[in-house]
Length: 188
Image (cartoon, rainbow, N blue to C red; front, side):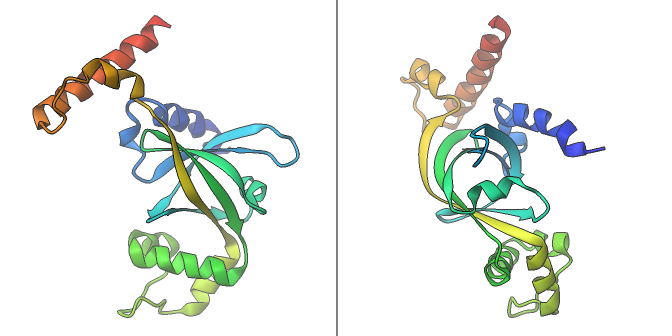
């Protein structure tokens, strides 16, 4: 049984909801267009944000990344904001290994996930393990992010008089926004 097919609709709904903060520290939605079908596909992916680039690590046996081989426009829903970006996938072992190493140096949890230990200089203790991993993975880089919208944008104008530097007002605004979004969903 493919658990992703069962869980993806739930994760997609959660990431599109006001409760996106429960998951979106490491998970975002990506929407892309199929190269041959022209259909739009949306699915959750784990990501690493590093400056101006969003990295996604995928297994080679997945097929979605093939739509980005030559680079293509994608839309990502990241932390409650919709962004347009240029996505490109990379499969050559050296590029993938370099990006994986950079990610593991920045986020040590990935060392445990991939069972690769880095030494004190930030290099893999067993370089052949990194090479093996790079042969099994694909890196997708998304750059040139342009914000399209914020999830709670429609509710900002109602509270334009709130002093957003005040912590208590921020909490009130967040609570009222959740109530407003929930009420809007029940009315539909």
